[in-house]
Structure formats: C-alpha cells, structure tokens
Length: 363
Image (cartoon, rainbow, N blue to C red; front, side):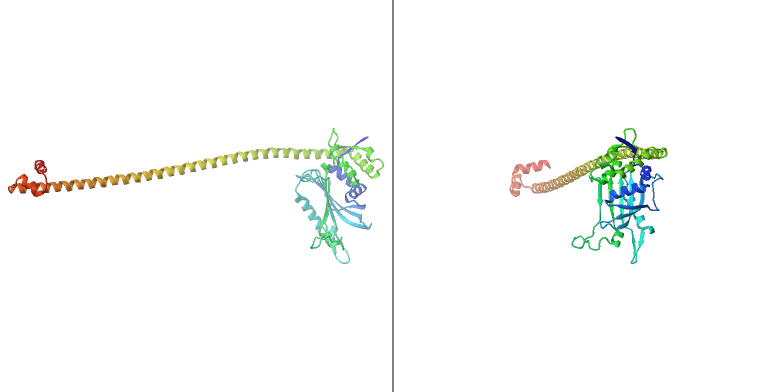
C-alpha cells in the first residue's frame, strides 16, 4: 500500500524531520555506517529561512558514535543540503567558520584540539560524471614512500586539521535499496514524487513493515504532510524556487541572445578582417602596378634622353659636315680664282669633277 508523506527535500520538512533526535540518529547512523548513540544540535544551527539567492540548508550536530572498538567518541557533523547547484566556495566558507568556533574545540590534559569533523552533503543535483549515489571521501595518512600509516592513527592533532566527507546525489537514488543507507535515503527519492504535487512522496509502506525506525520516520513525514503550516512553508519554497527557475530561464534566454550576438560580432569582425586583408592585397597590387609604371616611365625617360642625345649627335655631325663642305667650297673657289680649271682642282683635291661642280652649284 502506498503511503503519501511530505517530501523531505523541502527545507522546512527536512528541518522538522531532523529536529527529532531519534530520526537524526537513524539518518546519521546510516550515513556513518556506525551506531550513533547520542545527537545534540549545536548552538549555531542555521537553516536557510532568509531565502537568499541559493537555497542551502545547514545544521550542525555533536554526535556521540561508537568506533570500531565500541568506544564512544564525539564528532562534529556538518550537514548541508541544497536543491540547486551551487559554488563549492559556499561549502568551504561554512566549513571554515566551523573550524574556528570555540565550542568545537575540546581540551585534554596535553593540549587543545578541534573535534573531528565529518561533512555531509545532501545534493539535489548530480556532481559531474560520478555515477554512485553516495560517495565517501575519507582521508588516510602515508609515509614518504606512499605506505599507509596506521600506528597512532587516528590522532587528535591530525583529525583536527582534516575531515572526511559524505556526498549524497539524490537524483541518483532512483529506487535503489541495496543497503541500510539506501533504505533510509529512499524517502528522498524524487522519482517517487506524487503526480498531484511535488510536495508529496509516494512510499511503499509494506517495504518498511517491521523496521521500527523507518516506521517512526515515515510517521513524522506523514504528520508533516497533514500540517497546514508545513504545507504553507512548502508553498513558500515552491514560489521561491519557481522565481529562481523563472530567473534562470530568463538568464538562459539572455545568455543565448548574448552568445548569438557575440557570434554575430565575431562573424562581423571576421568579415571586416577579411575585407581589410583584401584591401591590403589590393593596395599591395596597386603599389606593384605603380612601381611598374614608375619603372616604365623611367625607361621611357631614358629612351627619350637617348633619342635626344642621338638627335644632338646627328645635329653636331650635320654641322660638322656643313662646316667641312663650306671649307671645301671656299678652297675650290680660291683655286678657281687663281685660274685653276675644274679638272686641276679635282685632281688636286682628289675628288671627281662632278662633285666639284656640284659643290659650286650648291653654293
């Protein structure tokens, strides 16, 4: 038979659940895989009722546990639950504040040490590509050669400076019930949300028959589901997260537009770059053409200069010829005036009579 109980993913329901010491011991015992004898809420408990930009519920426990030798040991449990993906820096900042609190320091005859700390993260989202719904991150000690050091461990000094972590990925629970922890965490399985409301989880009651601790836990969740004030608190959370979802949708749309604009600008810049390259190539071609024209003009100038020089040389040659002809003509006339015949003049000058006669006619 199905039992419809309040969804403990809601901060208000989870807080109501963990305020019961018996249930807190049940959950922590399953998470730590050891018996939790006693649980005390630390004085600096903090629940996210202010509704800031990211929902992150935090609560501190002082838990007395039984170690492997069945000896009681006090540890500090820092439990943080979030619906949405958030920055790890937020978790680190909170843990850092816990390390510095005086109430988390214990004194012995030899020295003062911080309580051993175990950080528990209940996440409403997945972490990267990790497939395991529950991840245990435990520190160990090694020597220089990589050999594990067990003698003297655990040591108060070492445990004061390091802490173990348990990470629960709620989206990966999906009906898995293979051990005690998964049995307890099954009430967080969001695949069992009621069709009518996400505030309600449908649980198979028969699965927990005879399990007095789980029956007690379900009874408290059932009470929460029927509490009007609790339902109102869940409504407030739904409104808050709807606002966040609307905001994120708007941001995604805005980011998409920005990305498209950036792509368009990038394409325009690429087009401008190509145009500049084409212009530069054209300018280089024009420069080459202008250089070729300049060289052609220089060649023509040289040719013109050579022609002028040739013309000047021809002119000078013609002048020389005219001067020589005038001198020859004057000599012929002088000889003729002295009574010499054309035949004698031609013989004297060594030229044909016809040329002598022609010179006299030209003159």
